[in-house]
Image (tube, rainbow over all chains, first blue to last red; front, side, top):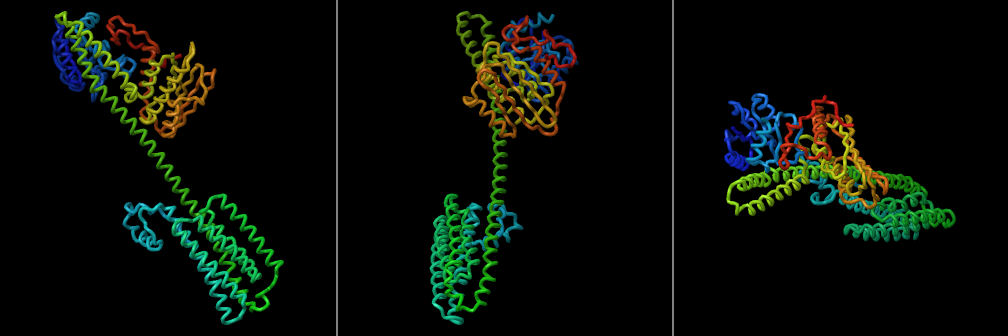
Length: 119
Length: 485
């Protein structure tokens, strides 16, 4: 299973890469710093998981999710941020993301369970 | 008289070059430092000295020189010398008053001038009763002029004494008609004197009155200008403080928070590895990091609500309502986007009112937040069914909110009493165009809120700790109508 991460914070990309490496059957497929570059580069599509930060400079995670889902319906997008659920911007619910998770809860176990729940 | 109301030429550094000649002439004429002097203060000082000097010149000319000339060439009478004596004394008194004025001791100066004047007019009228009309006017002059320079009690006393003096002048002329000079002096000199002095004195009083009016107008203008400046600077301060809070929140969130979150993930990862002997340590580290994250999140949220920038009040208010410890019903139709200062002020008013409602809540207390926006005004009402409180014991929070709102031109009304709940109403004028009032955005927020619910229990199947799968609880496909009841 391929995993992409879109986040402007290098530290969190590093943490994601480590988590994915520790997850059985999951591999890191790419890291992007902005929503724009993710849309640009995420061309090959296919099945996989995109871990998308909501708050990024530029387009932001919600709009990027919307576009990625429109172009690649097979991709599962997980929105992430460090904010409380109440503080998420409008559009979080209906942009096509499969789930929202607090960044600090990211773990191999959670990734596997989310993937299984979706399929 | 310093006849022209001063034009604002105080800040010499900011005088445009085409006004430099005028400023130089003014400086030369006024013969006082143009720099570092308060305008009104300078105006008063110069005006005072000018008046005293004029008064002195008048007494010297009409009271000393003229009788001396008359005594020399027309009529040798001791009464004329008496007038010269009285007026010389008054000239000396005025000279002393002028010295006092130079040292800015206006009260003593005007007191001296008034006393000397009362004595002089009484004595002159005693010697030459025919000069009564001129002396009546002359009696009024210093008191009329001096009013702005003395305390009101002294002003009142001087006015009463002057009235008494005028009465005495009348009595002297009417009943004590000794006619020392009248029988002897040629009538034409007296007539000429009265004809010249009467309008001069009347004109003098009118100029003083006009001048006081001009000074009042100038100071009123300056006051209004200063008030406007203060208002603007207050609003600027508030805006700057808000900007700073926003930056602080972003820094906390994008800086420390992000690193801690990455750390939390890595610790979690380390816990899944073997080496059971490190597990307790890692568990403890994990707990600490979680606490730090929660702490920073709470802190950052208190500093500035993250949703306010992106979604405005329509999104930020449901979030603050969801956090409140009392059930909140929201009625936010028609809310658009407004300038950041307005949104921030109203948000914090709301949050303060909610805290207040929580503080004075009883069993079953509910809060209703209602927004009403039209083209010009935005009204936000937060009413609760709690116990209410005595407005006299209002905490600093609501007082601060009142100040905050008034700084940007709004108004906060708090209506409460023990036993009948509290109603906080915030009203503010909004710019003509309510900005990009995107109705879908409002509806989104409403839907989102109805989905999340006010005290929504965290219900989700794949929720591990605080994971919420939005996709599994899709927003209702209901039409755009606000789903509140």
